[in-house]
Length: 102
Image 1 (cartoon, rainbow, N blue to C red):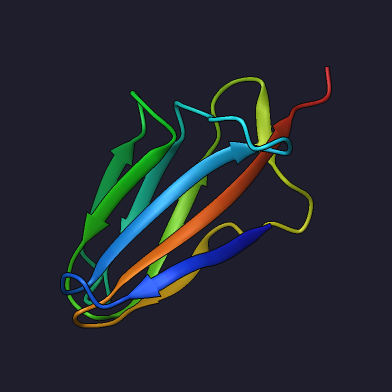
Image 2: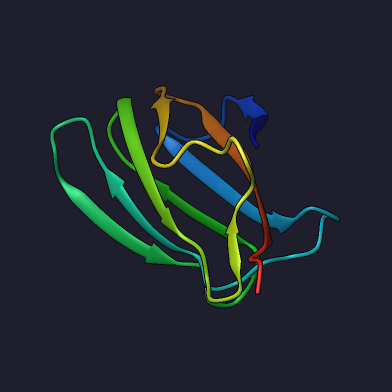
């Protein structure tokens, strides 16, 4: 499941994602596609650690996820994720991935 971990005033329109397994271990290699409120698309990959951050204009964003090989999103996990970025706030999301059945 995705949960909002923290949302606090820091910098305008920032989104921080953390990808973990069902035991809290770090998952690298998640591909992300962010769609901004105006339809502009950005892509990202958390290649070096379990976190990835991006930002942009306030409003409703969509984040589509492609887990790395060997993983899938936890049952019930929305994909894409819809999140509202607010001016002067950083919103942190934790996304849980599970080992894919063999």
